[in-house]
Image (cartoon, rainbow, N blue to C red; front, side, top):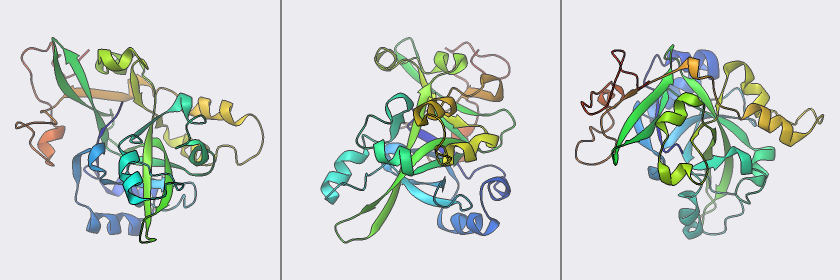
Length: 260
């Protein structure tokens, strides 16, 4: 699963040029500092683009609250369970069934983190594009009206089966025994609109179109390396140190800092 992200930390102008207006980017930068590391359970805001406003970059909170939720208490209870959504069961789950048909989005990130299990210990790895440019992860969004009738916009990040490289990193025995190795459903730049507007042409099978988009991203376009701990007393916090290569002597690491 994917519970940790990094965004707004690289050449930020890329966000404006590819994914939204320069004005949107400048507004987000005023309201949000560079986020070198966030954890989904903190329900931080992240930059997203929705099918409703495909030319806008906007902020939504991580952890989807379906619009049918009745109380703030119920909202708090459900959102820890909706940080990730499995691509294979989107049309089956009550929390996602409506959103996957009508409220799709992409989350714009610099990279994500996964934990590698080795000798009963876990080691965080940072995964990014080889060209280090931002990329889009498929997601769903929704609008929840809280107890005061204020709107809260939230999202969930979609995961799919892992490619060969990510399968070696995402090797948590407890997880893979249930769902197999996972990775975020990264959407290629030239297919973002396909994801946002899938099914709008009314032709073909909707489920088939979904499955053709939510596929493992090419491992040749990704790179990975170990980083400092994301939890505990050695965690450096929201700083660029958390996205820099960190050497663990007990791991077999190549000269390039990659695992395999």
